Amino acid sequence: MNSASRIVLVVGSGISGVASALELANAGFDVYLLEKEAVVGGHAASFPCKATDVCSKCSACVVSDKIKQAVLHPKIRLLTNSAIRKLSGEAGNFRVEITQQPRYVDEERCIACSLCTEVCPTDPKAVYPPPAEGAPFSYILDEALCLHFKGEKCDLCRENCPTKAIEFDRKPQEQELSVGAIVVATGFDVFDARGKGSLGYGRYPDVITGLDLERILNREGCLRLPSNGKEPRNIAFIQCIGSRDEGHGYCSHVCCKYAMKLAGLIKYQVPDTRITIFYIDLQTAGKGFAQFYEEYKAKIRFIRGVPVEILRSEFGELDVRFEDISQGIVCRDTFDLVVLSVGISPGKNSWDLARILGINMSNDGFFDVADPLSTNETNVDGILLAGACQGPKDIPDSVAHGIAAASKAMEILSESVGRRVTG
Ligand SMILES: Cc1cc2nc3c(=O)[nH]c(=O)nc-3n(C[C@H](O)[C@H](O)[C@H](O)COP(=O)(O)OP(=O)(O)OC[C@H]3O[C@@H](n4cnc5c(N)ncnc54)[C@H](O)[C@@H]3O)c2cc1C
Image (cartoon, rainbow, N blue to C red):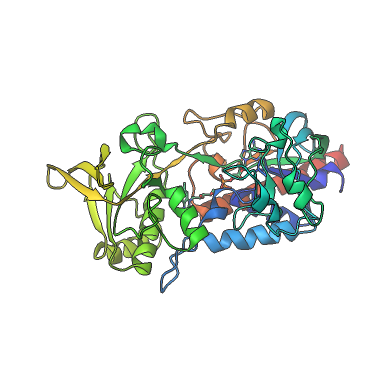
C-alpha cells in the first residue's frame, strides 16, 4: 500500500461503498473495502433483474457488474467479517483499529463443491454458499449454528472437504490501518415487519416482505407460496410498511417502484395472476416511472387505503380488511399471498459507529451531513457519507452518492498533501 494520503477506507460494501471504492481505485488510490458480513454487496446484491420484454430499469445488473469489478480490482483490498474498533488521527492521516473475525472457510482453497453443506447435520445448515451475487464466492460457516462451536464433537464438514478448506482453529485478527480519508457507506436496515403485528408477518407463512420476494425471485427465478409450494394466484402488495407512519415519518422513496416492478415481473411470468397494490399515495417521481405506472394501471388493481389487519382463514387464505379511501367504504378481500413493502430504516449499529467516528446523526437515525448544502461531508474533516446510510436512496442515487463521496475524498487528500508540501 501507498502512504496514508493515497489510501482510503470505505466502510460498507453495498452498492454505494462499491461505487465509491471503484471510483477511488480507478483514479489510482488504494482502497480498503471493509464489510461486517462474510460477503460483499449489501442488500441490492440479492435483487433479481425485473425486466419483462423490456428493461424495467431496476438497476440490479449495475450491482452485479460493479461487485465483480471491485472484487477483481488490484487496488481494492476486501476486509470481510470486519468491524472498526477505534479511530484516531485526522484527515490525511487517520489510524483505524479493526477486528476481523475468522471465516473458518479458506477463500483460496474453497472450490464451492457443496460437500460441507450436504454433510452438515444442523437445520438450518451451519455451512452454506454465499448469496448469488455475493463475493468472495467461498462457503460461509456460521459459528452461531455450528455444533463444533457449541462444544459438540462434530467435524463432518472438515473431514469431508476435499481441499481441506475448513479450519476451525482460526482466530480473530486485529489490525491497524493508516488511511487518509474514510467513506462511510453502511447502508440501512429493512424495517422489521414483525413490528406491525396485526399484519401477521412471522405468524403466517404467506405474508412475506418485499425483501423476501426479491430474494425468492433471485434464488428461484419464479414465485411459489411458502406454505405449500403452489403458484400464487391472487397477490396483495401493501405499501408504506415502516414508512410515513408514527416513528418513520419519511418516505422510503424506493417501495412504490420496487413493488410495481416486482408486480410487473410476476404478471409477465404468470399473466393471469391477480395483483392488488394497496397504497397511501404513489411515489411515481423519476424519469419514465409515471409512464410505467400508466401502463400497469390496466393490469394491476390499485386501491388507495392501507389495510390494518390480516387474518388467516381455516383454509389458509389471507383475509385482508381495508378502507378504500377513494370510495369511502370499508371492505375485505382474500389473497393467497401478501407482500409487505417494507421501507428503509436506519442501520441498527449506526449509533455505535457514529460514536467511534465522532460523526453526527440526524433525528431520524441516519448519519447527518455537516450542513444542508454539503452532499457527503460529515462534521469530521476527512469522513464522508455515501448511500442509504445518509437517508433513503435507490440504486442509481446510491451509486451517484458513492462517486461524489469518492471525489470529495480525493479532493481532501490532495489538499492535505498540498498543505504538507507548502507547510
Ligand atoms: C425491499 C427493497 C427492494 C429494493 N429494490 C430496489 C430496486 O429494485 N431498485 C433500486 O434502485 N433500489 C431498490 N432498493 C433500494 C436499494 O436497496 C438501495 O438503494 C441500496 O441497497 C443502497 O445501497 P447502500 O450501499 O447504501 O446500502 P446497503 O445495501 O444497505 O449496503 C450497506 C453495506 O454496509 C455493511 N455495513 C453496515 N454496517 C457496517 C459496519 N458498521 N461496518 C462494516 N460494514 C457495515 C452492510 O453489511 C452492507 O453490506 C430496494 C430496497 C428495499 C428495502
